[in-house]
Length: 132
Image 1 (spheres, helix red, strand yellow):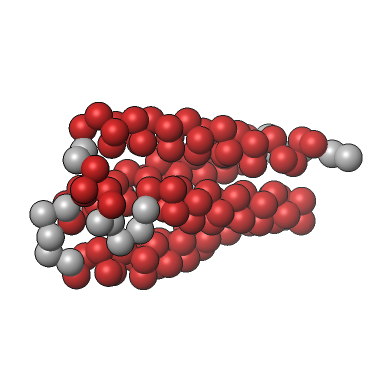
Image 2: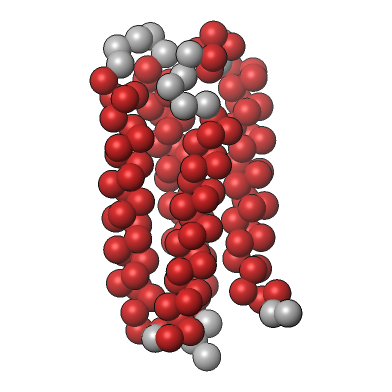
């Protein structure tokens, strides 16, 4: 079995877990518990959502690389745009709220989004640099 293709997914899992632990620790020490309890989407749900879409993106990019390495960049741009649209649909209920906790939830959502976007970008760069 070729474990090389799952190396990127494993790296995503490790980095996602590290980010989740750091995020939860920061919330534990600096954000009142009542804020996190009233979030529209919990922190673990957001991490799962973004991990799932990042894993799908990486698997699709790996398939595209096998067929045509020149299309990886365009596929990455298309899938990232699609993910942004889906993330906006998820973000819409948070944007319509006007509670004291809303800025914290928005910031948390965008930090998670940007964190996984950075991971996806680094994996895509690695895929593009490993032309075989």
